[in-house]
Length: 254
Image (cartoon, rainbow, N blue to C red; front, side, top):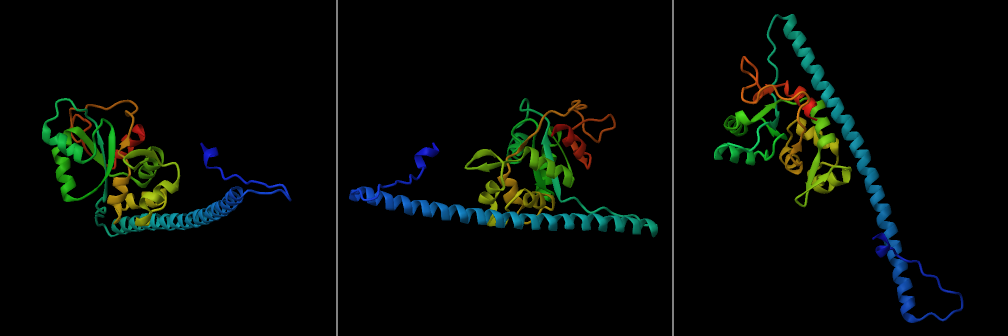
């Protein structure tokens, strides 16, 4: 296939008569080869610039995560010393996994699952914590399990199971160029930018979430406990809010 678009470098014997059409073709090929070389150099320079920018962003994000973690530790210790209770900050991010198939589901929950993009068994999506989303989750509680993922979980999911939506097709995120082409106008050029936007539920969360195809997870190692019962029930089960314990389930399914 590449041979069709190869620019041939024609040579002419010195002193030989060259037809006008051949001269035109040689000039055109020379011009095209020059343009191609310039475009390749410009692309390489842009990639190097983006790579440098991504490295700087990654370092900045790591510092931000570390400072947030240290601040929380400091506040917990301070509360303990003063004999007070420390109220943990409210979660901003949810990860929702569908644990039930399509059989015997009434129309309303079916529609809500469709709106949440949970169309298949063991599909998972990232959602922002807000009132409309929590009300929707109440309608589909017996069919899903959800919780608050950690940074490690978000990163592992995006790197291992991340697929992008490009021209309505499911494309593996094999390079940062795919992300840059789709989300470059939003200032997102790589995997770490996406992880940061998801984990912090930033202003571009909607664009990143819509770009990511719903995660297709495997069955959990060791299986579920009992899908008919809720996770918070005394006898134990699977559906419902697991809070931070969702990380254990995702590690078994990822």
